Image (cartoon, rainbow, N blue to C red; front, side, top):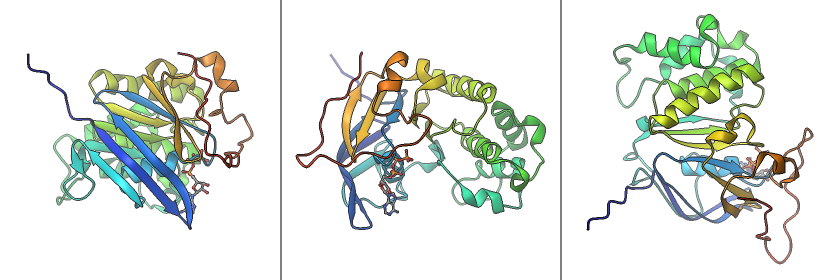
Amino acid sequence: MVLLVSTPVIEATGLGVTLGGQPILDGIDLSVPAGEVLALLGANGSGKSTLVRTLLGVVPRTSGEVRLFGAPLGPSAPWHRIGYVPQRLPAAAGVPATAYEVVSSGLLHGRTLRPPRGHRRRALAALDDVGLGDRAFQRVQEMSGGQQQRVLIARALVRDPDLLVLDEPTSGIDIPTQATFVDTVSRLHDAGTTVVVILHELGPFAPLIDRAVVLRHGRVAHDGAPPRARDEHAGEWHDHTHAHPDPEPPRTGPSLSVEVNP
Ligand SMILES: Nc1ncnc2c1ncn2[C@@H]1O[C@H](COP(=O)(O)OP(=O)(O)OP(=O)(O)O)[C@@H](O)[C@H]1O
């Protein structure tokens, strides 16, 4: 019998990151198979953004290895298959470009500046998916922070990525637009896209999440079933309305008990 095991979309082993002399991530092992929707949870400062930024090569690692679609981080990694929406993009406010132009830039890969066939239709459809179809030709610098965030989401969606990485995509976005966006992610998932999403609470993403990884003090404290909605508020990953920082790490090392009910 031949057993076909597909290459994980993300494979990280022994990942460590030190920033400003402080250890931020320590001994992270993470394997994300194709087609999975993985939620990355944890208190403020637990290392979620640093982890995705390290997985995408934005933050240099101190130790460990990362492979994307089987390729080591670097020029040979298939960047055109990846859509990334960072948590904040303050620079967007200073970009003298329309939403349509920013989204179209998501279609430019590699060494060519020529947009692919159908780029206009694709860019407008991506803007529709985030509820900004009627603002396509408005300058992003005139938009609210939430609208700018939606433009960045559309820029990632327009690539039709095989891996979509989202850092708190629904913060600052109104509820109806969140629902439209989640529907879009759901459609991508049905088509086989792998999704890694940082969330403070599962919220409208809950039905989509296959697996949750909870970080605490830069280590994996839980890797498995997502929390049930009614347990979320009590969970350690929950942010409440007032953000609270990751508590001081215990002197004896991190506890591995996380209240997650399968
Ligand atoms: N460039 C940097 N230099 C020094 N420390 C940093 C840097 N970037 C992040 N940190 C620290 O790393 C820790 C983890 O930050 P990170 O943003 O990854 O956490 P997070 O879990 O995503 O938090 P949040 O939910 O608030 O976004 C924090 O203590 C933060 O202050």
